[in-house]
Image (cartoon, rainbow, N blue to C red; front, top):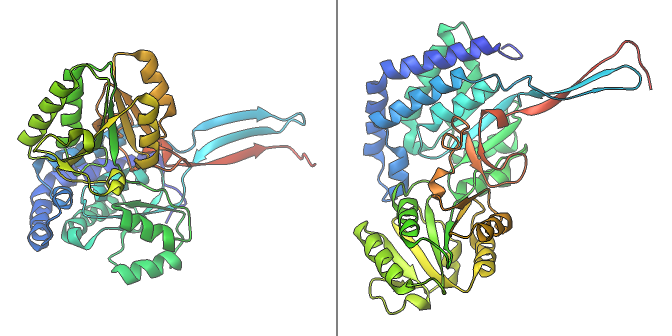
Length: 398
């Protein structure tokens, strides 16, 4: 295998892969039907992530075509310096080397995440969940065809068909070089990888996202924001799970009633604190730990809050560090909230559903990191690189 593929070679593989997916979409969907028929769980989010339909196929193709059109993220100059002794010093982006992506239930990761990592000049190791095995194998077969058609070794993209024990063994004692691991899945998967991995891990963490309805909120805007965040896609890590309503919101009772009615129209289970005890449609919170749970379901918690500082404090204590929004007409209050909340993405009068690499202008994402190193939030093409120093001299010694 070459040390690194030329950008024209990488782009050619991506374009060929897009064409192959379009050509063989029926094969992928049939393989996916086999996975869906074998899936016996009742996890709505898992089922949604597992399913591949025409819409998801179109997104896969679009992501690959867009990747092929983007600039090469490798070799970009970040810094230059001329030393007093005449040495020319440069810092440039460089690929990691080999990236292992471990994920659950999402066949689209086999296309989109692998595509981003490949475009960044990395060798890819894929370890998908058993529930999506047939879908993943069908897609990897197309990856290998795209590589072969461009006279490139299939070793660049490899699928690890391992069970849990084999995966643990590989994490602890890799049988080949691994420079970076990115787990995509629930908290149990992430904890498993972090416990056993012997190389750096970028955590694509949990959501548990909050919306704070400030006392100066536009109530209609707040209602639309919450409904969109909760019901648009329950399986997404950027969905809303918690709502904090300022006790001094004018006509608060009317707002709460409308919110409850609308959520119920979407069959959302509503839990609330003592401030909502008079509403029959709302179940009372029995365990305060529910404030830190990510639901990935038609379920939401609503509570009352004294003011913005208390909202910030509660969000920083319980959220997953993913996304949080404030709904207010007060620009100063919004700026203070956004500066104080410790999340990867903070919103003013906009839905948390936009925490997505494509939506935020990155052209797709490998993961959404809740870590602060080396990249926070959506990890796009330009983030899946490390850096390297290049020093040119003519005999200098120190």
